[in-house]
Image (tube, rainbow, N blue to C red; front, top):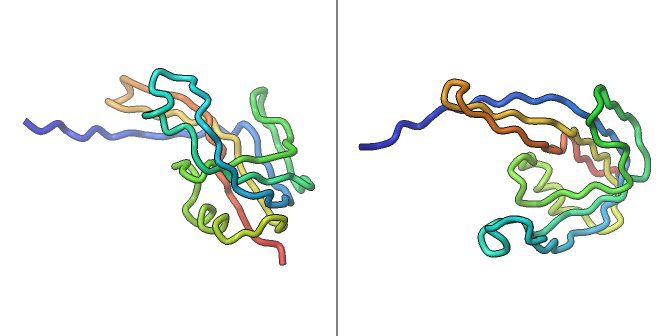
Length: 134
C-alpha cells in the first residue's frame, strides 16, 4: 500500500534584514564539524562555501530580540536549499575581490505537517539580492 504524501505548510518570521555592499572573498571548502551522529559521512554539513566581506551596510533592521547583529562577513553554503538558484548561479560567475550588492534575511521558519500535528522550527538566511556592482 502506497503512503499518502503529506502536505507541509511553511511560515517565516523576519528576525533581521541586511542590505549591504560586500566584496567577494572566494569559495572555500568547509569541512564537517562532526556535530551529529551522521557525521561525517551522511550529514551533508561540509562542502563549498562562498565568503563575502561586508564593506558597508545600506540598511539593517532587527524588529525583535533574536535577529543577527550586523555582520562583517556572510557565508553561503552553495548546496543550501534555501538559497535562490539565481544567487548560486551569480556566485559561480564572481571573481575574487569583486564588489556586489548583497542582501539577506535572517528568518525563523516553522514547517507544519499532518494538519498541524507536527512542526519543526529552524533559522534560515536566504539571499534576497545578489547583484554585481560594475
